Length: 449
Image (cartoon, rainbow, N blue to C red; front, side, top):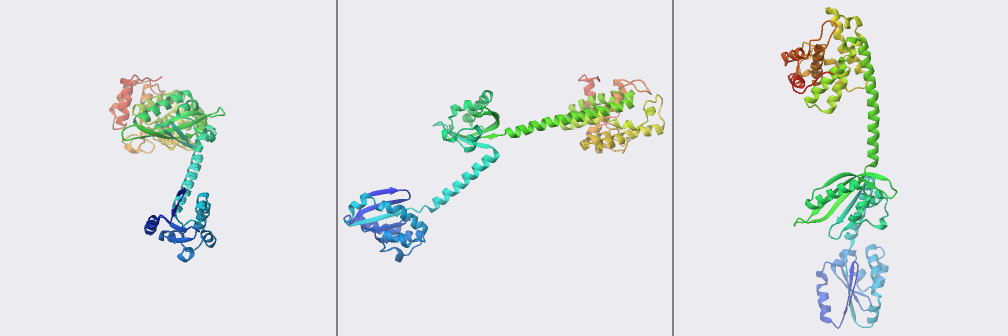
């Protein structure tokens, strides 16, 4: 007769089966499992070496002892006590009692599950850590066994959708109600490709909760493909990024509001400068249009173009410090008067430097009259020491100034202006900037508004 319970096996052998008994005794010590032999009175008559090593007991503490007394005497050995508490009901089973009075030899094979218990506890801890991590990151995980159409969800996924875990995860076919219809179409296409060739996917989609609210989520998935190329299962996650998206939207609104305020301030500064020098009204805007067009032609990144645009629109703001009669003087300027004009680059830099602008903007304003050969002002910079944005602004400034009317001369026109920058390309003006400027006028039809 054999009874099996978790972690142990009870074998009852009648003594009349003597050959079986001798065989059992002969192999007792060769087995790795702890073995305990009892007679018909449930007295310990033999214990193998593995039993002693597992439960840290001696022969004197076990042999000849009734199984019930062994329980009492080994109270300081929790592992053995727990074991005996679990097997005593088994030994008192009806089937055993029926055979009492007959010669019996009972062999109890015990499986030491200590390591299994440790593994179970470790897995429990890891599962708890994973669940907490998912909760903190607002990420729920899922799995889909394709053959059985069995879907499993983590606790966090149930929370995201506000569904009762007791109801279980919906089948994959039922997922259509969980997402916005347009997003479900994209998700379905991504899953089909993933199942077909294992291509992972990542999509931003809208999830529908039971309370009717929509959550913005990032859906990710990857397939496990068998050696024959067939998909076995899909794994994935759904991260609730609603709070992050709301923060991003608020930041965008805040940025747009700040940008509007900044633009209003810039426009005010432009009007002040043009009121001071009415003959150059519109000059800064025209220079800005050309400078931005050149920068785009040269494929500068958006941030640099935006900074250049700001610098260009206020590049002459320093002229507020130059006397009006000098700015509007119809005749040739004296050396002293021209020296005063030159101060506007430094004055503009000083004004902008005290404001909340990126450093490149102030530096571009300061350097827009510098020249490659060091003949410019205010610091006689040369070549690469001059910011690229300032080199672009210099060319745009010269072209617009020559093409427009000034108090001391009539407009010279675009052709003369382009001739000037081409003649001094590589000497006064950056060659790449000049080429881009000429291309805009001659090939792309650029015109000043």
